[in-house]
Image (cartoon, rainbow, N blue to C red):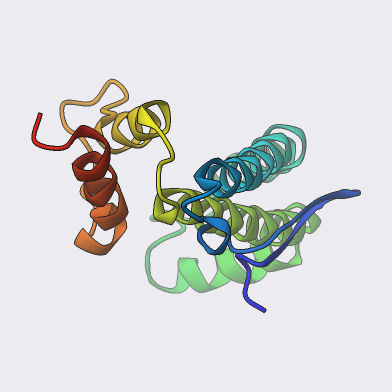
Length: 170
């Protein structure tokens, strides 16, 4: 069983448990697969966002405060030569660094789960034009930048199949 089939999110009792959404897609009920995939993605996204706000940000702020207070103690900066090794040794003994390391690893794990859930959603056939619109908005979102993200052909293959199926030769 892979992460897409069983996803555990580490915020107390929040858990996302599901089946591979694309496996639910049938000609008789294409909406079921999409709804499962969307629910898995929303839960994973909300869990990662809650962890980032409630745990990651405060722990990182304490670590950064400690680092900013002590960086001046290393002549030439904490990234140069022997000072870097001394910085790492002192930093590794700091409880804020240790906590930040654990929190950062957990946040990365939650982001991986969110990414897997998003991938599962994109692999799920769009049951209608509204779902296709969601996929296209996701793929073409520039979020205030001057360009969109690049995606692999594999990642966009289902969306291409969806728009060809739902829009035809429009």
